[in-house]
Length: 398
Image (cartoon, rainbow, N blue to C red):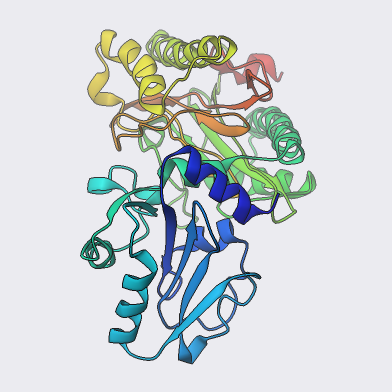
């Protein structure tokens, strides 16, 4: 079955009359990926592409770029010159339709899928149709992975787990030998190990010590570098994928202490974070194994309730996890009831992180991140086992 036929089937199952894609100057990269059309070339005019639940799809393109959707074979095509002609073509295309999906999110509840501007949604609604979010469709046709992609993700996650060990061992070697050891030098070490494992990353990993680890998206700077010394808490957040364009990221965060005995305050906070992480994992695994749905909001709440009960609710400042795909932050369901309201369900053949954290500005931050996949009715942790205590680096890597 072709991708267009699969989308038509999904629309019928959802009782939708169609899915209307829209782009202006690459405003919706998801449309290009879902439709399988090249994103290269000049794209300076508006285009629409409508896939109905029944019937043939239709493209509305500018006379300046009439070729823009030629890659979509078997498509009716309407070419417009003026704005009036474009609106008339769109009105004719939507005549008789009642409910259609577009790549937008009501009140921008899920900004990752909200790609159509408000004015265009207003234009479409003025033609007498109800516009609903395509969030679930986007997840189904963009975030669902092939078995080969899931296997590649697992290989990447296993390699990242090796790199964590190599990085902690390198910190131990440098500190013991009184060699230069800083956040920036260790960030470069991690990047070198990623390359040595034939992996690729679009952004540099996070290496943060002590109070810097209380900044969830801290980035070391060569000109403002921080030494890593005996007695420091170290957070390493690393993410990479195999080099094929369609490969899927792995994304892990581990914590280490440059010493023999982890301070009780840091160990206690880590235990709370790990318990929160495991609560989300347990909920997801129990629901999936029972064939029952679980939403991103529910999984987030499972973790967040543990941290709130421990008195650190205000210090857990981000969602519990994010979709993972060709980009480290994918377009599928996020584990989120805080930053957004992700009502979507976690579905078969998707990948996502589970990474609660507690951040104490001026003191230290703790995060524990693992990845999960859902495949063949099982929710599994990648590169298991998860971290259960802060690693005493000078003891473990003597």
